[in-house]
Amino acid sequence: MADTAQIFDGILGNRPALRLLENALSSGGVSHAYLFHGPPGVGKRTTAYRFGAALVSGGDEGAVNRALRELHPDLVEIEPEGRFTTIGQVREVLRLAASRPFEGARRVFILRADTFNVQAANALLKTLEEPEGGAVFILLAASREGVMPTILSRAQEVRFDPVPPGEVVSFLVERGQPEGEAKTAAALGRGSVGLSLRYAEEEELKRLRESVLRAGLAFDASFEERHGVVEEIVARAESVGEARERAYLAEVDDFHEGPDRRRKEAAKRLGRAARDGAVAEALDLLALLYRDAAVVAAGAAELVANADKIPEIQARVEERAEADWAGAARIFGEARGELAYNVSPEAILEVALSRIRHKISGSSPKGSFPGS
Image 1: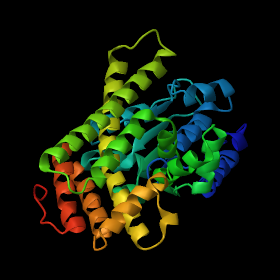
Image 2: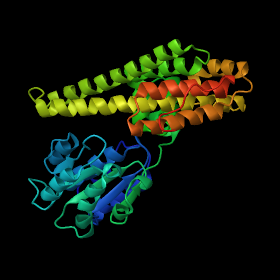
Image 3: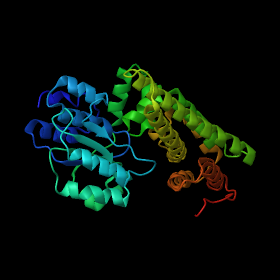
Image 4: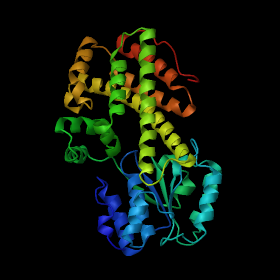
């Protein structure tokens, strides 16, 4: 296959994973199913598109470019319907996989394996066990643990790890970011190139972080004040979702005359996902803030992720010598899990912010999560 060595140019980190896929392309030893697993933002989806583009193109550079712009009919990504990829979606994939490609060398399907419901996973098993034709399935997951064992056993695993901070900093500096800001963005990204880039360039996410830090450092706030900062955080998350929706419509309008109903619906789904992701990120930021406080209290300020906030963190640590910073961080780790149960973000944030007062100031916690 032509240009195999260049297909993954620009993807940071994860050289073992990329070499495995390069070897498969150059040797022709492509598996019928792959599981790309690793934390969000480390290049799984980008790599899946590059790999899929190479497979459907048959060496045609124009076909590669169209596939990378998500305009090739034989490279198909299946977005979950809500939280799950459904049996109906999988059956449609299997119908397409059993037929000839529209125009490419083969068909490639990208699915999120950790969103399969039981029926969807079972529907896919027979095809993964006894593949027909040349279709390739690229399954994405945040971890192996989130994928049914029967799926795991039928796909070639490709592990993706967090990208080293130095590589992320160099990448951001090459894009014009000052080195200090690049280091902060890389630390906040926690090994995710995509998240680091967003912290460097996305104003909505920067504003979300500022709101979160204000909330996290306001230990003695009244209930009314906590409610106000929680509303601000949720409003910031809504802004992140709206910005993603606008960006998607702007992207597709480059190739189409205007947004039709299907593209509008896709934009709304992406906007909702971005909003939900921003709420989860707010909880992660709060956990990271208190982890940073624990690190400062231990005398290792050089390990702080929020490096631009060290003076404020140090001041809070000095004010509260007996605070259980690590315990406060764990509260927000637990709170993040509540998002999976459709508890309102406002309730999760308010209860968690109330509970950390006990860890930091010694006051009694003011509530608990529903069902806990």
